Image (spheres, rainbow, N blue to C red):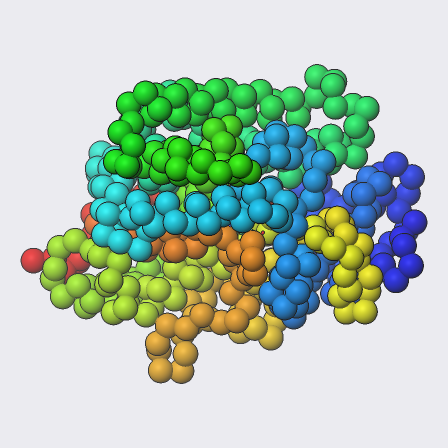
Length: 470
Ligand code: HEM
């Protein structure tokens, strides 16, 4: 039963709560229906665990920003906490260890190039590999998924581990596949069964695969950290691992929050957080541009004018390309790769819109509702770059652009994702025209998941003969 003054919702049934009222393949429509019926703050029981759902810009901003500290926790005791042994950054509860690791992650990513030319060069190097691969398949319909996932993974790998991998490297392939599989299971019905029915946790059910996958990649990363420990020169940092080991060594005082096993989980979290997210957004970009040739052609025209015959591209060029920037942000909006964000939890007893929410309550932010809410978006169901242009045609970011969430737990990779998205898509547009194969029917409906992806597709890359380069 719901506590007094708890947000309203449908009556739960024993054992299952309200889970049976949610579609297992795509619950977003059900969530919209509940919001229409109960209002923008409502609750559902996921098994016997009550969860508060937030719908729309106004309440999500109120919770994540205005009452940021109250809603900055992460739920505990879920499968994902057990997989990461409560040591990673993404699912770490609000507190000094999370704060210290978030600070460290931001600072070390900056040291290794975020916002600087070094990062830009790493991304451009990776883009060069993508283009070379595509040049070998000109005119044939290809599924670019493997290529784009490998490239996104490599960008973050070069920052974390100081190296990139060949696309055919078996360990690299295994890591990328494990991330994909784990993201699918971790937000699906099997995770709900793990979370809701502790008695079943020891049985050989599909959720065991997540633990097995994670053990393999965890052991691999432990090995990489070990190698770094034996080859490092203190003070001469090659990558994020060296930075962490240096900081660990320097902090001699009691209560140091950095430790080797936390480093392993931090590396896995950052690698995971940066791979599928960026890759699925780039893949959505290629899909939407191939199926909206007028928008593609307008981006290419602006690109030619902006570069004025110059070969090569730089992140600085974005300031001369408002329509391209609008198209990339519209891609992030429609790709909607984190449809319900990352789960939050209350850090203390609090109230929202007059409802009482006790400490430790699971809170789910329906970011999809914000990215497709009528009044904020003129044509929410369309791929419509002018959403990000003001009346003068200059680039602008509407308030409801919450794809990276907001508040203390806001995505810490937004800057990296933007840079990658711009440099990869613009380089591809410079070299190629994306053509939808006549024999295939486009299906833009994404595959719902903790990290949403476009349905697998094929596209033909043709040489861009009009790219205006001298
Ligand atoms: C298009 C790409 C991306 C999108 C749309 C995206 C979106 C998000 C969202 C919605 C959250 C949840 C925030 C919350 O809890 O309210 C998040 C968290 C996070 N993201 Fe991203 N992300 C992207 C790329 C990246 C990249 C490239 C990194 C690089 C390392 C990254 C690192 C993280 C981390 C570490 C968190 C957890 C932050 C915390 O709990 O303190 N993300 N992201």
